[in-house]
Image (cartoon, rainbow, N blue to C red):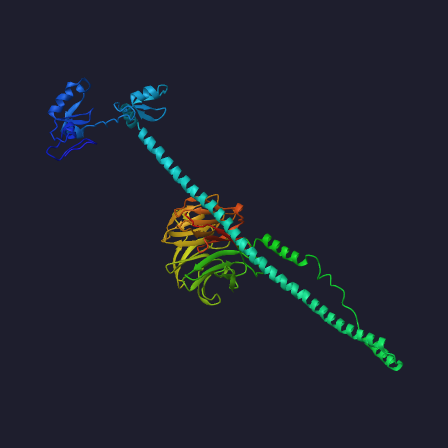
Length: 544
């Protein structure tokens, strides 16, 4: 059964039903189709169609030929002038309207055209393709703008959340710190004034006793009339006077110094404000060498979380538990570069100079589990599906930068160094791995992504991120990447598209290195070059 656009066809009795009759719920076989009216007509309706001058000259075709010809689209009626068709176009305003509207509203417009003719020209001269290209270009521009705006929104939200969170931390910290200082100072005051007060009390008691004794002697002397007895009492009085010593009335000015203790409290608070310890940083203490955290591993379970830091210069794995307080450290006695979680019970770290991967107990950082040699100057390390991924090489005097994959016993499974397009890496740094692929920061090439079979997927090397170092996943599998020389953290999509900047120098970043997400506190932990602390930036519910 044939159909054409909005043309009514029926399954009642005929292949082609008369349109006017069908509108009256009568089904009569159509004999002809009018191209201008875009309707089927039976013999009776066709006779009426031929009577009127307006329709007498219309083009009529056999019904079965409708599918073979280009039937024009029926024109819509004007909303303002319902008896008129919208057959005109005002190019100045890009609107379709009827001839009355043209006369009344668009009399001064220059670009007036007949709609069917203009539509035919548009299709014939390729302008449709131009418009489609323009639309596609604008769609891509909007997609790019959307991604950029999303990144900027996250940047602003991160700044806002970080400032608010740091103020909350400051308020709590300052109260706790001042309370600590006040209690400490109270103890100092007690310790300094207490002994002196006790000494004075002893003097007062002694003076009262001596005064009482002298008063008694004075009274006895004044009432004695016998010369012998009087002289004996005189001798006793002289002996008593020799025993009495008066002293200790001088006040220790150092103890009475005006505002001494209050000033000490104020100076301690000001000192803490200046070093930023009350604004959400995690101090790393007790090191003789400069602290340089090259890698951060965040490990959590249902009841606790653990942060492990690779302190390169001090050759230590530093351990921070629930309260972000350092609890213990493991001294490897050799420079440590990377650290990662292997499983619930183990972590692993790299020793570049020894070309070795060492395993460590996650429960007790003093217990060594096992080790294996890599034969490369190993740095970045990650673990997925019982495989250890290790980056290394690329520095002066070292092997070519590469990625090696080992099993849990240290057997080399794969080595990824280059493909037909050249070497993958110059100097590979940090590494993250998930089901989407292998993501590696590189000193010169930015971020390099390989699939799990070692095939190059993409390289993202944006000039806004210089000397890429740290890397971690966002909640949606995209990437945060630190630029050590550009002093910033940027966002790169899982497909390698540069989405924008998250943090920079205006947020207090200086030579950022290692990165990790603290999911419990919704914040990014960032180490900086040779800085004795971690900085915390609160990203809230990260939607990127």
